[in-house]
Length: 322
Ligand SMILES: [Zn+2]
Image 1 (cartoon, rainbow, N blue to C red):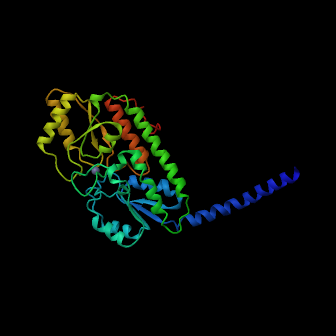
Image 2 (image 1 turned 30 degrees about the vertical axis):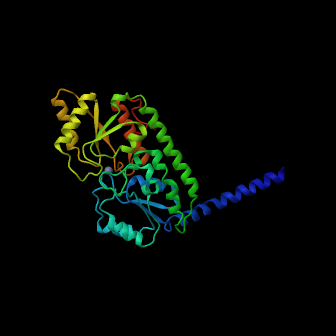
Image 3 (image 1 turned 120 degrees about the horizontal axis):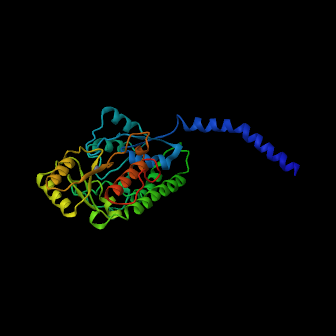
């Protein structure tokens, strides 16, 4: 007994003495030497943070409110891409104007991954703008987004000096995404069938619609590069009047001119429709805030849509943080 107590206290004393030194050693190993994994968009950066944890320094290139379809890297951005230890981009032409620099980075032989292209093509929608690509907005379905995790772990696993259990990172991140998916199913379920139409500025929400049973109508197409036609706006006004839709939505990374024109067009025919809110489509909220995380961005979207169209979401969302 006393021997046990002694050995216990000896271990405790040893641990106590060793702990700060051990912590210091971990930090020293983790800080300057951590490999840099660079993501083009925040939604990918968030997955890297989840899978790589403290073993990597996860960075994001394209900031808040910036449209990746139109993003052109500056000289400084190009330097960051070429300097990063690993590179993660979406692919399927989301980063339409970065083709050259992504190819240059791939030619360096560093670990790199087009995360959306890791999912079998048969699971993805066709990209109407580019016959050789799929619809790139896969993060809009958290369960489908979770299917990119094994490929992310494999690519991070090619980094030397990596101090992290990647399988555990995949498991934790997948559980987080599935919890988000369950919340979406729950709070969107009460929306009546005739209101299950999502009118947005551009066509970013198709995977969301497939997963949660919404018909999608966008004013612009899949990319934000084309302007909306008058005929398209007229057709949408008729659809909204037919369904007596209560709300449509703007997007944080796309100008809202066309959405406002639509609301005015509908009002001129005597139907009062309101702006349901601003959704995050291709960009997350401000870095350092809840909406600046993938979970916060999606919670915001799901909660906003649910509350505008007659679902059961609580005002402050899944975690009470909105
Ligand atoms: Zn988009």
